[in-house]
Picture 1 (spheres, rainbow, N blue to C red):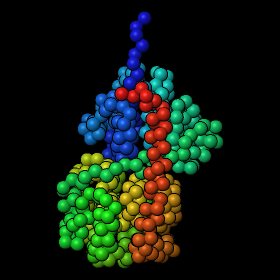
Picture 2 (spheres, rainbow, N blue to C red):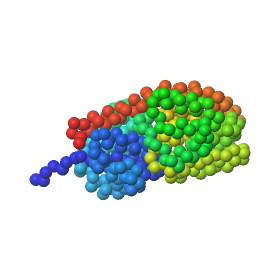
Picture 3 (cartoon, rainbow, N blue to C red):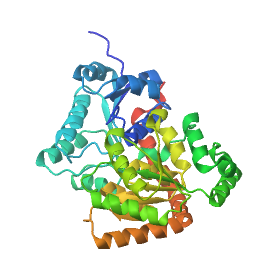
Picture 4 (cartoon, one colour):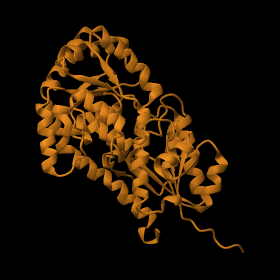
Length: 404
């Protein structure tokens, strides 16, 4: 009889290697947590771009599309992590639940433990999506979810889960690349904001920086847009008009493509409208930012975010930066409501009343940035602590005593 094969690997699965900042940020935080328990060479990520994932995060990576790569690893796998984000949804088709559900079933069949890590479920519109998702979650060894709706859905299925928070609430900043830091200096004026580009240290230094930001004449505003059927051309025009009307002439607008393919066309459309108002904006080139933690450092240097992507909103609020949210989806509305930030609802049809409403919301938010920042500051630490419960579950299921 051959000796029993040792199980000492951890596999992390999710929507990785597609250039989506939110998912890559989730991955970076999960890897940081797993590295506290398992040696880096024992960690494998299933990725659309294995070489880039391995280079960026210092772990091993294989193609998510090659079944043999997965089945070769599973006999040596102690834990299979189905990573955070919205993996189990059927917005475009039932393929995602089937794809990720099959991976979970294979992992359990081949003897690995499974942890579903801080996921948000839905929408699940079809019978097949519901059935596959329910079956996959039912066989997992541990489940954490990032929102109350997902927790309630699992409860209705009789499946136990821990309500935590998105992993990105725990992500730590890393140093901005010089190219981006220099760009910020030019935009904001080196004389008035020089110290705001230094890494945050003591509370005294933080207070000094915050006071200088309040006194600085330049307002740095980030804009995050993405492709969505809920975002009409009329709403885009309304957004450009309202921001032009209420942002001071000295404001600098930074256009932030968090996922190039989906975001850049929308930001370019906005930029054309912005130029018609006689204004200029600056594109941030994501090529210069190799890790999500660098993006987090970028968001911390803003004075205000006008944000559509969930993780643009989370990174800003985590950094105590106020947000005007463009809610194209319930998950964005959920976070904005929790943090008492203003919401521009994209799920309502554009109208004259909407333009008037948006104008009032934007004018008030710009004038009341300090209050919005205080709301973010008050709630960010609680979200971080709640996110830390993901790590507690991870530690428990991996059994720290046997970790190398």
